[in-house]
Image (cartoon, rainbow, N blue to C red; front, side, top):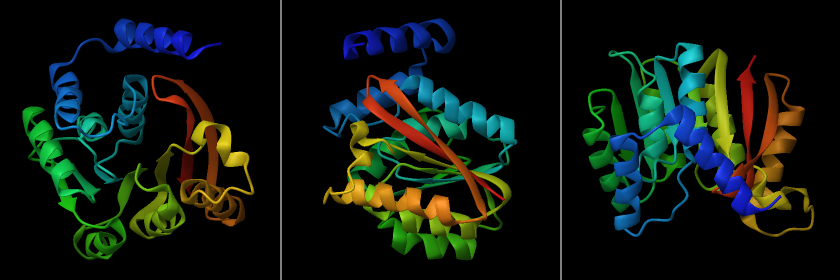
Amino acid sequence: MSEVQWNEVESYIAGRIIGEDAALSGALDAVEAAGMPAISVAPPEGKLLHLLARMLGARRILEIGTLGGYSTIWLGRALPEDGRLISLEYEPRHAEVARANIERAGLSDRVEVRVGLALDLLPLVEADAGGPFDLVFIDADKASIPEYIRWSKLLTRRGSLIIVDNVVRGGRVTDSNSEDPSIVGTRAMFDLLAADPDLDSTAIQTVGSKGYDGMAFILVK
């Protein structure tokens, strides 16, 4: 199996059951034009986030890591008209691009992008969010994942879903000797999930245009 084949299958899936979408493709174009890293979720993964949010009947979503707002649009479209999504982004330039993409997608009435270090913003989210979140999507710096999980527990309810992207790291997550902060943080997340009786979780491996990686899915018990 080669990356060429992975990409061909991903393109086939996207072409057959996702299709063209001006707002989503425009968001990716804006990310590229701004010179931002090409690390948005792949279209099938974005659709998965959207479907999971709809299955949950999510009315309140928290996203940690906005980038250009591609995944934000997928999640925001799953919300009812009175739903709310708060997305946290460290880089002001990324947030600026994301806000423009979100506005073009017609979601500015229910999506808010906040700028700053997530661990500084999360206490403020707790103070003014107005209730627990139904879904949390974590796609930010991996060194801080354990702290993001702990905060997500505080900000959710029984039955909420927490999703973490990029948890396989090209297979390097198995390297117990790695000093890479992303690997160390991801392994610490798995240790936390294994030890926490309030969380029930699994992870899947993924391949495609983003290479070899995976996602973790965590149910708050």
